[in-house]
Length: 269
Ligand code: 2AM
Ligand code: CA
Image (tube, rainbow, N blue to C red; front, side, top):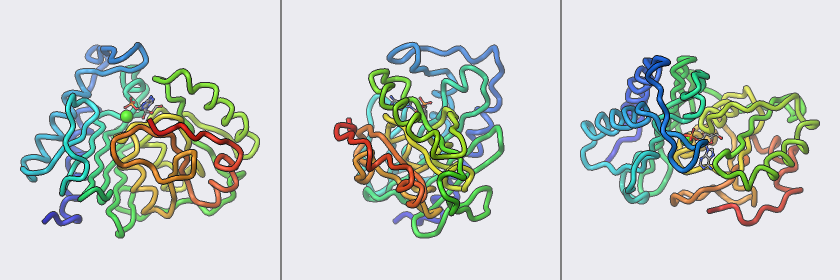
């Protein structure tokens, strides 16, 4: 039996530890290798942070399972306890010294998103949540905004590894721009979810995300009173498939019109 409060506490301390490694990177150290193409990068730090996170979590929970961005093979997502890790979310930011990246750790217990920790080491902001227990930023409870969409900022991602989705991204951006205060492109999907969760923005959307890009942020957002859907309005897939995402407080999702006026029905891949 895993105690979710204890697991969350462990995840929070692992995220803080890994954040130190991310912050320790000096310019000369951040050589990036291409994974699938020149936009999809991995650095020695992605590997080092992942290895550290896995080692620390395994030391505490030897029989836990893992589903990590830099793994070749993944464990079962329906395991009693599986950690879903994106060691550096915002790798392109990291490789370009933009100081806008985070470590993200989600935890599913028997297939149910149960705990989440996202740490931005540059802002020293630790977001966390446990199912049914609410969401917090540096220990203080957070909540989505109740402001109308037109009074909020909208976060979006460009799904840069899937250029075939660029038209959809920018169509939606053009559609939503006049309906909100302004738009922001941050470069880390997990931070985007958390930015909405704590009310700094009203909405987030992106055309292609992997499970490790949303597993933690989705729970943090939901525990902060928000909702996350595919662009078809269905729940996000928790089985490892990629998906598009629209996320925010319900009223902002409705006011955005994204689910009403766009009909993307092929977006779980
Ligand atoms: P990464 O930095 O870990 O690679 C940027 O658009 C955000 O979405 C980042 O969180 C990035 O993760 C993720 N991302 C971008 N394009 C993606 C794609 N095609 N598939 C999966 N994740 C993607
Ligand atoms: Ca990622």
